[in-house]
Amino acid sequence: MNNLPKRYHSLSSKELHIKCCLENDVESSIKTGFEEYYLVNEALTDTTLDDIDTTCEFSGKKISAPFVISPITGGIKIARTINENLAKAAQELNIVMSVGSQKLALDDPSLIPTYQVRSVAPTIPILANLGAVYFNYGYDIDDCKRAVDMIQADALVLYLNPLQKALQGTAQTNFRDLRKKIAQLCNSLDVPVIVKEVGFGLSRSTATALRDAGVWAVDVAGAGGTSWVKIEKYLNKKNCKDGDDSFDTAFDHWGIPTAISLIEVVDAIKGTPVIASGGIRTGIHMAKAIALGASYVGVALPLLLPAMDSSESVKNKIDSMIQDLKIAMFCCGKRTLPEFRNGNCIIKLAK
Ligand SMILES: Cc1cc2nc3c(=O)[nH]c(=O)nc-3n(C[C@H](O)[C@H](O)[C@H](O)COP(=O)(O)O)c2cc1C
Image: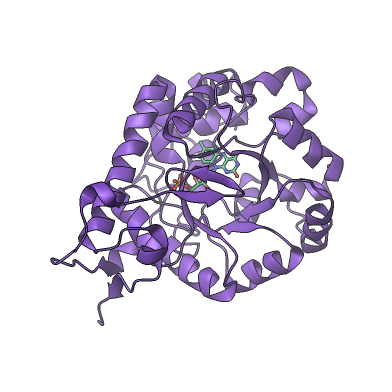
């Protein structure tokens, strides 16, 4: 951190992440894998665009589209604006929203208001968020309950981030025994538990272990979108810019591409809802993810800039993705999400 340009010196790490994402290209060096798949155009679609129905349920609540605003922030000044704009847009669109890691507010209750969005989003599913690794650093099930109660959440999202922690050079790389602790949490929390990565994907075996531990859903958060390898490099290396020789590339291609992680995980834990995130940038990515078996899709980075602006900007961004999903379903001749998901609407060309 000492090598950071002066303008970064007084910022907390959460602020640094946001500033870094806004000022640099932090998209992964590897692709999501969706580019290898093609949706099947049905010219005799036998539907009308107005009939396309993207409604579904998320943990008992009816939502208008399978869209989750992925965890981004909280605990810093600007987070209040960001979370409020995200929440207002999510409420108007009737979709799901997660807040960012609540560890800061568990440590310092004065920061709680930066996460609290229930007043502007009274009915939608709102998700609490904490790093699972903190179970090995003094946080426990009661802290998870506090995080949920703090924002009147409908579910708790735990994130797994071994590579991010290793690259941060912090001492917090003890990921031992987390399966057992997640299972204990699932048994004692009143709301469902979701577990996600942060941009490197979930494997078949991790997803199976999580399902067996009792999680309600998993979010693959695969590679191909926001790259924490890039973010941590920008923040830790002097004057780092893309193309700079000093830019360490050892982990640039680390991670399971989102499409591959999704296909593996959907197959491994049939019947457990799977959220596809990591590099979802268009309604076509959404459509491909759902056609490959995702129950929902999640988006983070593309919403950051609009959320700094207004709820209207966030709403426009998400709405245009959902409209493109509807057009894709229409052109594939599928009226509902289950028809689309189970309708052999996607192919991979043989090489
Ligand atoms: C600025 C920023 C902050 C993030 N903070 C969190 C966080 O606090 N908790 C978490 O689970 N994920 C966090 N993430 C990861 C995202 O939720 C998501 O898994 C990842 O960015 C991949 O999605 P994307 O490619 O659409 O950005 C953050 C992402 C960004 C861009």
